[in-house]
Length: 516
Image (cartoon, rainbow, N blue to C red):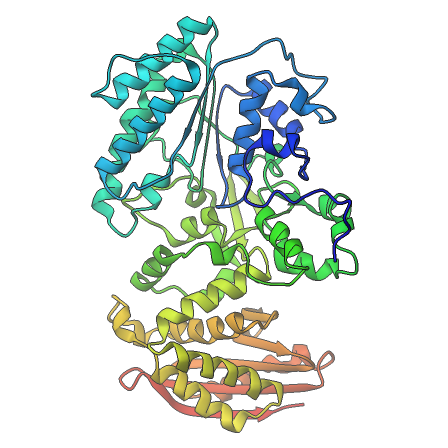
């Protein structure tokens, strides 16, 4: 049980005033806020959902409105000039935006709410762009101060419609016109800050805002949202009595925006609130169905997402006309930066899953789209675990045969998917990762070649080689001595050669040996 004197956890609360006035726990982000507003005039931040973007935006609002009392004891308290107060237009995109009409209604509603808050009245009611333009000018004239504009979830109207691309494109044009108002009214503006999940593509949305600074992966703003390891080991420590902090780190830490790695706040708050029960809190709040649709259209090997090399340009923009799975997975939080590589004038990144929660949950979710019968999938998954725990490789063949017999191949638009070895490797990888195996190595490079898949459980290691319409899977492992590197560290080593027939779409040859 948690101690009575501990502060309340701000679960689901993104209002800075409420957190401070009602004495909820607050991790001080005002240093990042101070650095941001003193060094930038137009800024953009991309972070995954439920990462604290809305709370940070509301914190900026209270700073610019000069509410000094709320910041007592925080970093910014004795550094900001609280006498300088600015009018704030705050725009949050929420509600039904599944049609262009719904988006326009949302914009008009937001503009009306800001008029009421600022006590400014606009005459133009039939054009959202003219209304926004009028709101800016009249607010500036009324308060004799330049206006602060804070926009939360700027991209929601597009992300909500990735399953209906025509609507997403129409909404993009509406937003282009709306955001374009800021370009033409710079003389009335003090500061602009936009947040979203996806990174902006200047050519599509912000074509006129050439001075908009993307701070998403600037190291100095790496911890602008999220909790650091230091936060866990200090502020949160009283909430985590007798909890294995290394396990917490494995499950929930790992998001890297080129500063210190951070935890998703939602995970930590829910973990503590449920008596420190390990579960998939963040993942279960959203359904990445659009990622599955992208996966279905191309030959992706899921196992490669453990160690995926990408060019910097792949992470720079979001274009609904050219959706890229790696880009979407990074911006949505399913992949993060593992390593930055600088070569001459080029920058590359190695991406990987941020943590155990994301890796396990995403693969378990994706496997549902492979298999037609969900209950059958559960039985197969449990069979995988049971067989490998006791090294029952004789019955393991029946388990994997059942698995591939359950795959709904008609879900895939690529007609040649059954010829692609990476697809079969992906199915295996997704099952092992989704079942909770925390150590799986795909495409493990050795001097003699690459191991398709290595799976570790307790003191055992299983080495897999897959072939489609070819022979010699097991012989390849033996010839290239793939097992040699594990001889000194594991008590039991098993090698498995699995061959598939592209017409039958199932296992035709299954061979295994124990080598240690």
